[in-house]
Image (cartoon, rainbow, N blue to C red):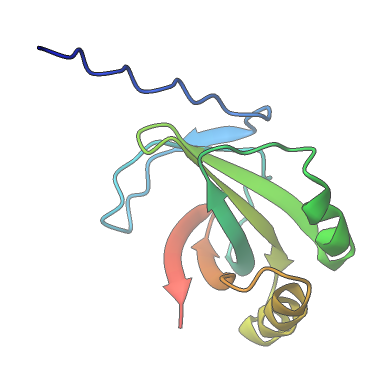
Length: 124
């Protein structure tokens, strides 16, 4: 018996994109749609999660809304939405927010560096 493979579910972004870009500074050559403002200079964000089944209204984000603006990045090629807190002008400030976010249940959160609106990558 032959079975027909099931089509992959269509993943849609659950927010209005502010701008779209393909990173030029990293090996990640996927189109990224974000609702974040495009800022000049270097800054940091805390990535809380990356999800295939993202719901903007998920109540778990309520506990970190006071730590910064919540931004979303949709990567269509991967079918993922990144949820980030930002923006922080120093790594030290981002470290403090990461610590708080981790204590509030986002145990896999990490810091990401940005330059002129483009993601440069994770900070160790």
